[in-house]
Image (cartoon, rainbow, N blue to C red; front, side, top):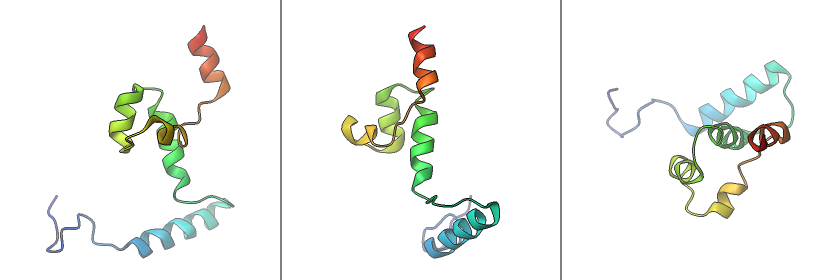
Length: 83
């Protein structure tokens, strides 16, 4: 993709992204949900496919304790892994 002179790939601001997210949540009737919550969801879903070390590389975490804040497996998924 071509980049703009200032180095951005997408010609938008953080404020515009936040406003669009808030507006979309409001239209969908979603309450008490924040953009940062998407990081938790992504880490949890990626953990089903990646090892801990791979997940750390993808999310940028340098410590497993920090990664654990974002990884929230479902009980049924853990039960399946246990057999």
